[in-house]
Length: 157
Image (cartoon, rainbow, N blue to C red):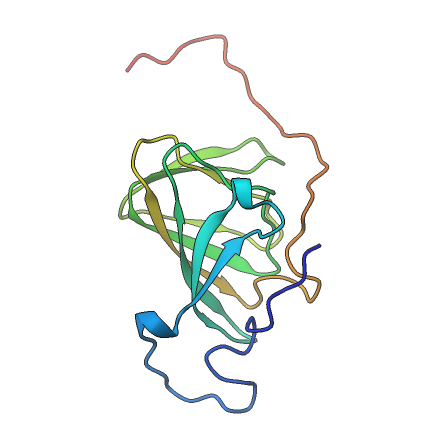
């Protein structure tokens, strides 16, 4: 597991000092998920991260995905602000194309991977509650086999 940046769980204010806070662009925390694998990472902006919720945005470049598979310690909601993202749960093989203006819920502990198979960048708003990761940070390996489904027929479009 990777080390969680120190601003997770106490941004924009430390524990015990909670109060309404206007978050401007210049206040957001920029990070790469994950720094250990920059060649397959995405750009993230943390809007807020407390002990109860983490909210942010991330952007996937055209033709990219993020590695490793992500697994959170809370439920995660994605809302696609721009573009089309293809979400996969490697444990179940479920694949869902999520279009601009749509969302998807990833339950706590559900492994997931996002792909951008388009020629345009994708921008996603996310919220994770109650915790983004355990104290050890994000898992850096996923050693389960990917469940893939095959079809003998081709869907006509």
